[in-house]
Image (tube, rainbow, N blue to C red):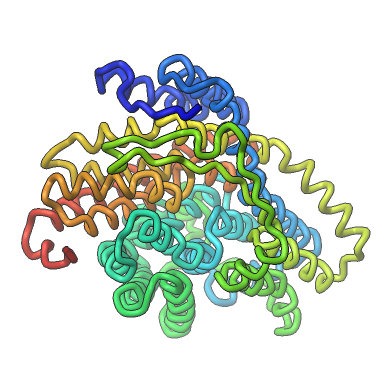
Length: 555
């Protein structure tokens, strides 16, 4: 029997919205303020979602359970599969001594921690976001920053803040391509529309990143390098998104940013070399008269440095190859069995005003093991391990230890994805979206925050675009706004929610080995997330109503 979603079951949007928010509030409060372990907080949020979905929204118990199970399985593959294999590679590199050599080689480019952040967290992380997405950039950059000596909180939080600008074009443009395909936007127009506001944020985010780490004064000291890093990302991003297409926007911009920053650092050096891995540490160094004193580091032969970086270079190649649509299609053609969830698949209907007519929700789990990014990472780790002289038996032992190490993180990801999937199929997240959609003239601002909410709930800009992209189009047409503007706003607002989605936070805590501190990471990044989302909302509002910003809008 088909079940139709109801977005206002109590005939009061205030009451319905308050109830719909309960599961997310329970999880975030448990995690961020009550300091409850992440897997327990996620379990409490899931339990609350089950209760609200069944008893308040009238979702059949069996459907609710199956939706949660579908989400949990999705948490294992592809998300958990990525985390497990990236941590495996990092542990191999750390144990072999490669991480220490990498630290020395980066110090050879620059010993300044602020510049290292630009190079690794912003530029290198953007490459992995553009090539793979789904938590890969945070896992990789946080692990490398830990190897460079950054604290777990700094490595986690700063990797999350840096992973914003490229998210809309992550995984070779998947979020934008999906938004256009599912909701009928013109892909070229939408891609250009998304790229325009992100040009501004691509310049802003590296400044914001260094300010978050080093404070205002520390940021001003290296502003030329930050500007080079941001502009060399933003300009290619604008050109590729407006004149070529979505697939290589983030990858091309990231490579350009890395190359330009490294070349610039050959001719420019900051007056003071910031060797501390925190603002507090730098102040203490200043007080002790040791600020700006470069630390000694060992210079290794070129062959040794290349060998130390080979695992990450191999990883970059494998991740990029696995992200290519043609490769994914070929691998899925070999093995990718699809399992429609009986009793859930096409048994739930989304209802107006979210869609123009009742629309059935599919529920098919595709076991795309071969095409999963995590599989490419595993192969890269095996190749990297062989290059690092590990025997097959030692690789197997390390993999087993890694599984034990990340077991609670995998459990957390499973529970959080179960929560997000249940809120989608029950209509709870749509109720929250409709609350934003009812803001009238302020809709450009709150519609952008709808995208932020979607990513915070689902952990994916792609999922948020699927979830709210149709609603954005309908609301824009009713209010006389450009559908392209609001479709783009959903994706642009969504990138700011990426740093606080529970899945990304768990990935960061796992990559840094800072288990059971997910609440600390959430508190560290929450202000940055909401502040950047608000700026994105203001930008959308200006584009909607105020000249000359309206000239940027494609009808």
